[in-house]
Image (cartoon, rainbow, N blue to C red; front, top):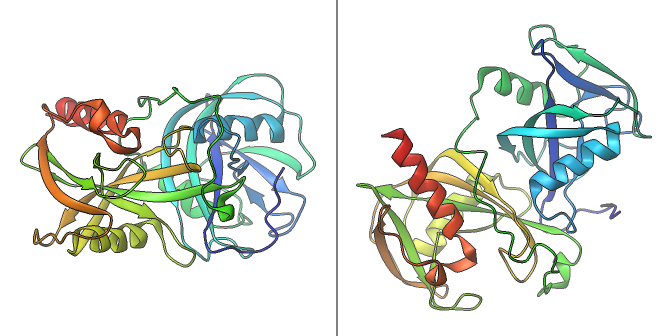
Length: 303
């Protein structure tokens, strides 16, 4: 397993799971290692480039840490504050779930576990996990569909790793869902990969910025306008979305402050597509047709 001993230019992806029982209590584990040794936390670990998706990575981590199989019920949120971990910049993808089968057997990184009521959490909780649990309690970050469409065409293939910095790592990104009059804004790519395809605006996160800050920067770079980043819609991380490297992309609803778009080295055409008349699958970059179809269904059900 890859060990991150030094901070690179890009954050590390983690997957954690808030497991609940029939009483609504959450499972906490006591850490056996630094940082936050002897503190309680939410079980999970590093998303690996070999995981077919973030959901698969989350289930694998629970299996490795607790010896059980779990079923994921929804995405809770994405937490990307650069200061949330004292070692390096970590972006955490948080899921909710329940134990599916098996008895808990702790791994070497934990000393004990307990079920805790959300109204009576222990005082010594590590990282930003108390904030995450409070958000979970309020349901504040439960956005978009969990039973999303999956891109499984290349589940058993390996990325090309176009850049050595991402060899055996997962690259994180944020994309903008810009909706107006039941239509979504797409931009046509003028560079590889997916030259000439319609793309959802966005890009990769750097160390020192949150996912929301990353997305505001990327929208300005690609569209030439300022924006307000809103609610999280979902995370899409299936192997093969990006042929170059393993990736996990968070999609947010975004409000533009202007529509004076500017062509650039990445995109050179901008168009709103009605949600009921999206471009064909073969004309969409990064296989984002699955995202567009989920967005269409989301608004159809909302109405």
